Amino acid sequence: MNEYDSDVIKDMLIKNGFLYTKSPEDADIIIVNGCVVREKPEKKAVEVLKYFKDRGKFTIAAGCIAQKDKDALKSVSNIVIGPMEYDSLVEVIGKDGVYTDFARYRYRFYKYAEKRKDVSFSEYVTIMTGCDNFCSYCVVPFTRGREQSRSVEAIRREVEYLVSKGAVEITLIGQNVNSYFYNGVDFKDLLEKVATVGPQRIRFTTSHPRDISVAVFDVMRKYDNIMPWLHLPLQTGSTRLLKEMRRGYTKEEYIYITKLARKIIPDLTISTDIMVAYPTETEEDFEETLEVVREVQFDYAYMFIYSPRKPSSAYYRYKEQIPREIAVKRHRRLVDTVQEIVTEKRTEMIGKRYRLLIDGYSKKNPNVSRGKTEGNITVVVNEKIPVGTFIDVIIKEVRGTTPVGIVIR
Image 1 (cartoon, rainbow, N blue to C red):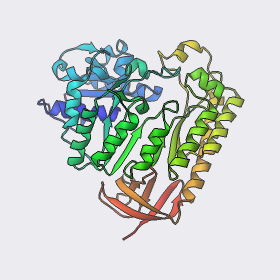
Image 2 (image 1 turned 180 degrees about the horizontal axis):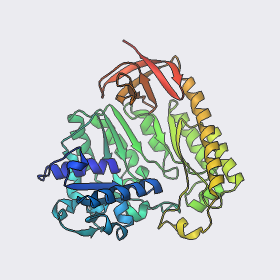
Image 3 (image 1 turned 120 degrees about the horizontal axis):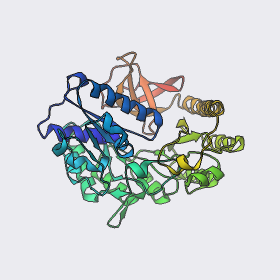
Protein backbone atom coordinates (compact mmCIF):
# COMPACT_ATOMS: atom_id res chain seq x y z
CA MET A 1 0.00 0.00 0.00
CA ASN A 2 2.78 2.47 0.90
CA GLU A 3 4.66 1.60 -2.28
CA TYR A 4 1.57 2.37 -4.36
CA ASP A 5 0.91 5.61 -2.48
CA SER A 6 4.54 6.69 -2.86
CA ASP A 7 4.48 6.15 -6.63
CA VAL A 8 1.31 8.22 -7.00
CA ILE A 9 2.65 10.99 -4.72
CA LYS A 10 5.78 11.17 -6.88
CA ASP A 11 3.73 11.44 -10.08
CA MET A 12 1.38 14.00 -8.53
CA LEU A 13 4.27 16.28 -7.52
CA ILE A 14 6.06 15.97 -10.87
CA LYS A 15 2.89 16.94 -12.73
CA ASN A 16 2.65 20.01 -10.49
CA GLY A 17 6.09 21.33 -11.35
CA PHE A 18 8.34 19.56 -8.83
CA LEU A 19 11.54 17.85 -9.98
CA TYR A 20 12.40 14.33 -8.82
CA THR A 21 15.91 13.19 -7.94
CA LYS A 22 17.06 9.72 -6.99
CA SER A 23 19.64 11.22 -4.64
CA PRO A 24 18.17 12.38 -1.30
CA GLU A 25 21.24 14.55 -0.74
CA ASP A 26 20.37 16.60 -3.84
CA ALA A 27 16.72 17.07 -2.85
CA ASP A 28 15.21 20.10 -1.11
CA ILE A 29 12.18 18.13 0.07
CA ILE A 30 12.31 14.69 1.69
CA ILE A 31 9.10 12.66 2.03
CA VAL A 32 9.19 9.59 4.27
CA ASN A 33 6.11 7.40 3.80
CA GLY A 34 6.36 5.31 6.94
CA CYS A 35 4.72 2.06 8.08
CA VAL A 36 3.88 1.38 11.73
CA VAL A 37 2.66 -2.22 11.60
CA ARG A 38 6.06 -3.27 13.01
CA GLU A 39 8.23 -1.38 15.45
CA LYS A 40 11.50 -1.58 13.48
CA PRO A 41 10.35 0.21 10.28
CA GLU A 42 8.66 2.88 12.39
CA LYS A 43 11.91 3.65 14.23
CA LYS A 44 13.80 3.66 10.93
CA ALA A 45 11.39 6.19 9.43
CA VAL A 46 11.88 8.55 12.38
CA GLU A 47 15.67 8.19 12.12
CA VAL A 48 15.59 9.09 8.41
CA LEU A 49 13.39 12.13 9.04
CA LYS A 50 15.69 13.36 11.83
CA TYR A 51 18.80 12.81 9.70
CA PHE A 52 17.56 15.00 6.86
CA LYS A 53 15.87 17.56 9.11
CA ASP A 54 19.18 18.11 10.89
CA ARG A 55 20.76 18.75 7.48
CA GLY A 56 18.37 21.53 6.61
CA LYS A 57 15.96 19.64 4.37
CA PHE A 58 12.22 20.33 4.30
CA THR A 59 10.92 17.03 5.69
CA ILE A 60 7.48 15.48 5.35
CA ALA A 61 6.27 12.57 7.48
CA ALA A 62 3.60 10.79 5.46
CA GLY A 63 1.41 7.73 5.70
CA CYS A 64 0.55 5.60 8.69
CA ILE A 65 3.39 6.93 10.83
CA ALA A 66 2.00 10.45 10.43
CA GLN A 67 -1.45 9.36 11.51
CA LYS A 68 -0.17 7.44 14.54
CA ASP A 69 2.42 9.82 16.03
CA LYS A 70 1.59 13.24 14.63
CA ASP A 71 2.57 15.17 17.75
CA ALA A 72 5.86 13.31 18.26
CA LEU A 73 6.83 13.83 14.62
CA LYS A 74 6.65 17.63 14.74
CA SER A 75 10.24 17.86 15.94
CA VAL A 76 11.60 15.98 12.91
CA SER A 77 9.08 17.06 10.24
CA ASN A 78 7.89 20.30 8.72
CA ILE A 79 4.71 18.62 7.56
CA VAL A 80 2.88 15.64 9.02
CA ILE A 81 0.31 14.30 6.55
CA GLY A 82 -1.90 11.21 6.80
CA PRO A 83 -2.95 8.87 3.97
CA MET A 84 -6.37 10.44 3.47
CA GLU A 85 -4.93 13.98 3.15
CA TYR A 86 -2.65 13.37 0.16
CA ASP A 87 -5.03 15.41 -2.02
CA SER A 88 -3.82 18.56 -0.24
CA LEU A 89 -0.09 17.79 -0.42
CA VAL A 90 0.68 20.06 -3.37
CA GLU A 91 -0.96 23.04 -1.67
CA VAL A 92 0.63 22.58 1.75
CA ILE A 93 4.25 21.95 0.74
CA GLY A 94 6.26 24.89 2.01
CA LYS A 95 4.01 25.39 5.00
CA ASP A 96 4.51 23.80 8.39
CA GLY A 97 1.51 21.89 9.70
CA VAL A 98 -0.31 18.68 10.61
CA TYR A 99 -2.87 17.24 8.20
CA THR A 100 -4.49 14.05 9.44
CA ASP A 101 -8.20 14.24 8.74
CA PHE A 102 -9.71 10.76 8.36
CA ALA A 103 -12.93 12.14 6.87
CA ARG A 104 -11.27 13.12 3.60
CA TYR A 105 -11.48 11.06 0.41
CA ARG A 106 -8.60 10.92 -2.06
CA TYR A 107 -10.44 12.06 -5.22
CA ARG A 108 -7.56 13.91 -6.85
CA PHE A 109 -5.02 11.39 -5.61
CA TYR A 110 -6.83 8.57 -7.42
CA LYS A 111 -7.17 10.73 -10.54
CA TYR A 112 -3.38 10.93 -10.66
CA ALA A 113 -3.19 7.17 -10.02
CA GLU A 114 -5.42 6.52 -13.02
CA LYS A 115 -3.03 8.37 -15.35
CA ARG A 116 0.37 8.00 -13.72
CA LYS A 117 3.35 8.56 -15.98
CA ASP A 118 5.79 5.81 -15.00
CA VAL A 119 4.11 2.45 -15.61
CA SER A 120 6.01 -0.75 -14.93
CA PHE A 121 5.29 -4.26 -16.21
CA SER A 122 3.86 -5.02 -12.76
CA GLU A 123 1.62 -2.54 -10.96
CA TYR A 124 -0.51 -2.24 -7.83
CA VAL A 125 -4.05 -0.88 -7.85
CA THR A 126 -5.73 0.16 -4.60
CA ILE A 127 -9.35 -1.01 -4.44
CA MET A 128 -10.09 -0.08 -0.83
CA THR A 129 -8.44 1.53 2.19
CA GLY A 130 -8.87 1.21 5.93
CA CYS A 131 -10.16 -1.62 8.06
CA ASP A 132 -13.17 -2.20 10.32
CA ASN A 133 -11.89 -5.34 12.05
CA PHE A 134 -9.95 -3.80 14.97
CA CYS A 135 -7.82 -6.88 15.64
CA SER A 136 -6.42 -6.45 19.11
CA TYR A 137 -2.76 -6.13 18.05
CA CYS A 138 -3.28 -3.93 14.98
CA VAL A 139 -3.16 -0.16 14.50
CA VAL A 140 -4.43 -0.03 10.90
CA PRO A 141 -7.95 1.21 11.81
CA PHE A 142 -6.27 4.06 13.72
CA THR A 143 -3.82 4.95 10.93
CA ARG A 144 -5.79 4.19 7.77
CA GLY A 145 -9.27 4.78 9.14
CA ARG A 146 -12.46 2.85 8.48
CA GLU A 147 -13.07 0.95 5.27
CA GLN A 148 -13.59 2.95 2.08
CA SER A 149 -14.05 1.19 -1.26
CA ARG A 150 -13.25 2.86 -4.58
CA SER A 151 -15.82 2.84 -7.35
CA VAL A 152 -15.78 0.00 -9.85
CA GLU A 153 -15.50 2.51 -12.68
CA ALA A 154 -12.40 4.16 -11.18
CA ILE A 155 -10.67 0.84 -10.61
CA ARG A 156 -11.50 -0.37 -14.10
CA ARG A 157 -10.22 2.88 -15.65
CA GLU A 158 -6.93 2.56 -13.80
CA VAL A 159 -6.47 -1.09 -14.78
CA GLU A 160 -7.33 -0.36 -18.43
CA TYR A 161 -4.85 2.53 -18.49
CA LEU A 162 -2.05 0.47 -16.94
CA VAL A 163 -2.61 -2.39 -19.38
CA SER A 164 -2.59 0.07 -22.30
CA LYS A 165 0.79 1.33 -21.07
CA GLY A 166 2.32 -2.13 -20.95
CA ALA A 167 1.53 -3.53 -17.51
CA VAL A 168 1.13 -7.30 -17.76
CA GLU A 169 0.60 -7.96 -14.05
CA ILE A 170 -1.90 -6.16 -11.81
CA THR A 171 -2.15 -6.71 -8.06
CA LEU A 172 -5.33 -5.46 -6.39
CA ILE A 173 -4.50 -4.23 -2.89
CA GLY A 174 -6.28 -3.22 0.29
CA GLN A 175 -6.08 -3.82 4.01
CA ASN A 176 -8.85 -6.41 3.55
CA VAL A 177 -9.71 -6.84 -0.11
CA ASN A 178 -12.46 -9.37 0.64
CA SER A 179 -14.54 -6.68 2.36
CA TYR A 180 -14.65 -4.57 -0.82
CA PHE A 181 -18.20 -3.37 -1.51
CA TYR A 182 -19.37 -0.52 -3.71
CA ASN A 183 -22.93 0.07 -4.94
CA GLY A 184 -23.86 -3.60 -4.75
CA VAL A 185 -20.59 -4.90 -6.20
CA ASP A 186 -18.59 -7.14 -3.85
CA PHE A 187 -15.04 -8.45 -4.22
CA LYS A 188 -15.87 -11.52 -6.30
CA ASP A 189 -17.78 -9.29 -8.75
CA LEU A 190 -14.93 -6.79 -8.93
CA LEU A 191 -12.37 -9.55 -9.45
CA GLU A 192 -14.36 -10.88 -12.41
CA LYS A 193 -14.72 -7.40 -13.92
CA VAL A 194 -10.95 -6.80 -13.68
CA ALA A 195 -10.26 -10.22 -15.22
CA THR A 196 -12.23 -9.26 -18.33
CA VAL A 197 -10.10 -6.14 -18.87
CA GLY A 198 -7.28 -8.43 -19.91
CA PRO A 199 -4.10 -8.10 -17.82
CA GLN A 200 -2.12 -11.30 -18.31
CA ARG A 201 -1.70 -11.78 -14.57
CA ILE A 202 -3.98 -10.67 -11.73
CA ARG A 203 -3.24 -11.06 -8.04
CA PHE A 204 -4.83 -9.64 -4.88
CA THR A 205 -3.80 -9.08 -1.29
CA THR A 206 -4.50 -9.07 1.61
CA SER A 207 -7.32 -11.51 2.30
CA HIS A 208 -8.97 -12.18 5.66
CA PRO A 209 -9.86 -15.81 6.58
CA ARG A 210 -13.18 -14.65 8.02
CA ASP A 211 -14.23 -12.82 4.85
CA ILE A 212 -12.85 -14.93 1.99
CA SER A 213 -15.59 -16.85 0.20
CA VAL A 214 -16.06 -19.92 -1.97
CA ALA A 215 -17.39 -17.56 -4.65
CA VAL A 216 -13.94 -15.91 -4.84
CA PHE A 217 -12.31 -19.31 -5.30
CA ASP A 218 -14.78 -20.09 -8.08
CA VAL A 219 -13.89 -16.87 -9.91
CA MET A 220 -10.17 -17.64 -9.52
CA ARG A 221 -10.70 -21.05 -11.10
CA LYS A 222 -12.83 -19.59 -13.91
CA TYR A 223 -10.24 -17.13 -15.24
CA ASP A 224 -6.77 -18.21 -16.37
CA ASN A 225 -5.36 -14.72 -15.81
CA ILE A 226 -6.22 -14.75 -12.08
CA MET A 227 -3.16 -16.33 -10.55
CA PRO A 228 -3.46 -19.38 -8.26
CA TRP A 229 -1.99 -17.65 -5.21
CA LEU A 230 -3.67 -16.75 -1.93
CA HIS A 231 -2.10 -14.78 0.90
CA LEU A 232 -4.16 -15.69 3.96
CA PRO A 233 -2.77 -14.50 7.32
CA LEU A 234 -3.10 -17.10 10.08
CA GLN A 235 -1.46 -15.08 12.91
CA THR A 236 -1.77 -18.00 15.36
CA GLY A 237 -3.01 -21.58 15.35
CA SER A 238 -4.51 -21.29 18.83
CA THR A 239 -8.28 -20.83 18.81
CA ARG A 240 -8.04 -19.30 22.28
CA LEU A 241 -5.57 -16.67 21.07
CA LEU A 242 -7.49 -16.07 17.85
CA LYS A 243 -10.44 -15.10 20.03
CA GLU A 244 -8.20 -12.85 22.14
CA MET A 245 -6.97 -11.24 18.92
CA ARG A 246 -10.54 -10.76 17.67
CA ARG A 247 -9.77 -12.53 14.40
CA GLY A 248 -13.23 -14.03 13.99
CA TYR A 249 -12.34 -17.62 13.08
CA THR A 250 -11.07 -20.79 14.75
CA LYS A 251 -8.11 -23.00 13.99
CA GLU A 252 -10.42 -25.60 12.51
CA GLU A 253 -12.17 -23.05 10.29
CA TYR A 254 -8.85 -21.81 8.95
CA ILE A 255 -7.73 -25.33 8.06
CA TYR A 256 -11.10 -26.00 6.39
CA ILE A 257 -10.83 -22.84 4.28
CA THR A 258 -7.35 -23.70 2.99
CA LYS A 259 -8.29 -27.29 2.18
CA LEU A 260 -11.41 -26.14 0.35
CA ALA A 261 -9.42 -23.55 -1.59
CA ARG A 262 -6.91 -26.16 -2.74
CA LYS A 263 -9.71 -28.54 -3.69
CA ILE A 264 -11.30 -25.90 -5.94
CA ILE A 265 -7.92 -24.64 -7.25
CA PRO A 266 -5.59 -27.69 -7.25
CA ASP A 267 -2.40 -25.79 -8.14
CA LEU A 268 -3.02 -23.06 -5.54
CA THR A 269 -0.11 -21.79 -3.46
CA ILE A 270 -0.86 -20.35 -0.03
CA SER A 271 1.31 -17.90 1.89
CA THR A 272 0.61 -16.51 5.33
CA ASP A 273 1.61 -14.26 8.24
CA ILE A 274 2.32 -15.86 11.60
CA MET A 275 2.93 -14.13 14.91
CA VAL A 276 4.62 -15.68 17.94
CA ALA A 277 4.72 -14.56 21.57
CA TYR A 278 1.42 -12.71 21.61
CA PRO A 279 0.73 -11.86 25.28
CA THR A 280 -0.43 -14.90 27.31
CA GLU A 281 0.71 -17.33 24.58
CA THR A 282 1.48 -20.66 26.29
CA GLU A 283 3.65 -23.48 25.03
CA GLU A 284 0.42 -25.34 24.18
CA ASP A 285 -0.81 -22.35 22.13
CA PHE A 286 2.47 -22.28 20.23
CA GLU A 287 2.33 -26.03 19.57
CA GLU A 288 -1.12 -25.51 18.04
CA THR A 289 0.42 -23.02 15.64
CA LEU A 290 3.01 -25.60 14.60
CA GLU A 291 0.19 -28.12 14.11
CA VAL A 292 -1.59 -25.79 11.69
CA VAL A 293 1.67 -25.13 9.82
CA ARG A 294 2.18 -28.88 9.36
CA GLU A 295 -1.45 -29.42 8.41
CA VAL A 296 -1.78 -26.60 5.86
CA GLN A 297 1.71 -26.96 4.36
CA PHE A 298 2.26 -23.29 3.52
CA ASP A 299 4.27 -22.48 0.41
CA TYR A 300 5.96 -19.65 2.29
CA ALA A 301 5.32 -17.53 5.36
CA TYR A 302 6.20 -14.17 6.93
CA MET A 303 7.01 -14.85 10.57
CA PHE A 304 7.59 -12.32 13.32
CA ILE A 305 7.61 -11.75 17.07
CA TYR A 306 4.74 -9.72 18.52
CA SER A 307 5.56 -6.15 19.46
CA PRO A 308 3.10 -3.84 21.28
CA ARG A 309 1.73 -1.18 18.95
CA LYS A 310 0.07 1.89 20.43
CA PRO A 311 -2.93 2.54 20.33
CA SER A 312 -4.06 -1.07 19.71
CA SER A 313 -6.19 -2.58 22.47
CA ALA A 314 -3.50 -5.18 23.22
CA TYR A 315 -1.05 -2.37 23.95
CA TYR A 316 -3.21 -1.20 26.84
CA ARG A 317 -4.60 -4.55 27.91
CA TYR A 318 -1.43 -6.58 28.43
CA LYS A 319 1.17 -5.16 30.77
CA GLU A 320 3.32 -8.29 30.77
CA GLN A 321 4.98 -9.61 27.63
CA ILE A 322 6.37 -13.04 26.82
CA PRO A 323 10.06 -13.04 27.87
CA ARG A 324 12.31 -12.19 24.94
CA GLU A 325 14.33 -15.39 25.30
CA ILE A 326 11.20 -17.54 24.98
CA ALA A 327 9.87 -15.46 22.09
CA VAL A 328 13.11 -15.83 20.12
CA LYS A 329 13.22 -19.59 20.68
CA ARG A 330 9.62 -19.99 19.51
CA HIS A 331 10.29 -17.87 16.47
CA ARG A 332 13.31 -20.00 15.60
CA ARG A 333 11.31 -23.22 15.95
CA LEU A 334 8.56 -21.79 13.76
CA VAL A 335 11.02 -20.70 11.08
CA ASP A 336 12.69 -24.12 11.09
CA THR A 337 9.33 -25.90 10.78
CA VAL A 338 8.19 -23.71 7.89
CA GLN A 339 11.55 -23.96 6.13
CA GLU A 340 11.47 -27.75 6.35
CA ILE A 341 8.07 -27.81 4.64
CA VAL A 342 9.06 -25.18 2.06
CA THR A 343 12.25 -27.07 1.18
CA GLU A 344 10.27 -30.25 0.57
CA LYS A 345 7.71 -28.40 -1.57
CA ARG A 346 10.44 -26.74 -3.63
CA THR A 347 12.14 -30.09 -4.18
CA GLU A 348 8.86 -31.40 -5.60
CA MET A 349 9.15 -28.72 -8.31
CA ILE A 350 12.25 -30.36 -9.85
CA GLY A 351 11.58 -31.63 -13.36
CA LYS A 352 8.33 -29.68 -13.72
CA ARG A 353 7.56 -26.86 -16.14
CA TYR A 354 6.63 -23.35 -14.99
CA ARG A 355 5.91 -20.02 -16.65
CA LEU A 356 7.89 -17.13 -15.15
CA LEU A 357 7.50 -13.39 -15.32
CA ILE A 358 11.02 -11.97 -14.97
CA ASP A 359 11.05 -9.21 -12.33
CA GLY A 360 14.72 -8.57 -11.56
CA TYR A 361 18.26 -9.80 -11.21
CA SER A 362 20.45 -11.33 -8.55
CA LYS A 363 22.17 -8.75 -6.33
CA LYS A 364 25.36 -10.79 -6.45
CA ASN A 365 25.30 -11.54 -10.18
CA PRO A 366 23.45 -9.28 -12.67
CA ASN A 367 23.61 -12.08 -15.25
CA VAL A 368 21.30 -14.21 -13.12
CA SER A 369 17.61 -13.37 -13.57
CA ARG A 370 14.77 -14.01 -11.16
CA GLY A 371 11.09 -14.39 -11.87
CA LYS A 372 7.78 -15.42 -10.33
CA THR A 373 5.72 -18.48 -11.17
CA GLU A 374 1.98 -18.17 -11.48
CA GLY A 375 1.88 -19.34 -7.86
CA ASN A 376 4.17 -16.45 -6.82
CA ILE A 377 7.23 -18.61 -6.15
CA THR A 378 10.59 -16.99 -6.99
CA VAL A 379 12.75 -18.96 -9.45
CA VAL A 380 16.23 -18.00 -10.65
CA VAL A 381 17.62 -18.53 -14.14
CA ASN A 382 21.33 -18.40 -15.02
CA GLU A 383 20.76 -16.02 -17.93
CA LYS A 384 20.17 -12.28 -18.24
CA ILE A 385 16.59 -11.92 -19.46
CA PRO A 386 14.80 -8.56 -19.85
CA VAL A 387 12.53 -7.58 -16.95
CA GLY A 388 8.85 -7.98 -17.80
CA THR A 389 9.47 -10.97 -20.09
CA PHE A 390 7.50 -14.19 -19.85
CA ILE A 391 9.54 -17.38 -20.19
CA ASP A 392 8.95 -21.10 -19.67
CA VAL A 393 11.44 -23.08 -17.59
CA ILE A 394 12.08 -26.56 -16.32
CA ILE A 395 13.29 -26.67 -12.69
CA LYS A 396 16.62 -28.51 -12.62
CA GLU A 397 17.61 -28.05 -8.95
CA VAL A 398 16.90 -26.22 -5.69
CA ARG A 399 19.51 -24.12 -3.91
CA GLY A 400 18.44 -23.62 -0.31
CA THR A 401 14.75 -22.94 -0.91
CA THR A 402 15.21 -21.28 -4.31
CA PRO A 403 14.37 -23.30 -7.43
CA VAL A 404 16.73 -22.94 -10.40
CA GLY A 405 15.22 -23.15 -13.87
CA ILE A 406 16.47 -23.87 -17.40
CA VAL A 407 14.82 -21.85 -20.17
CA ILE A 408 12.77 -23.84 -22.65
CA ARG A 409 13.64 -22.56 -26.14
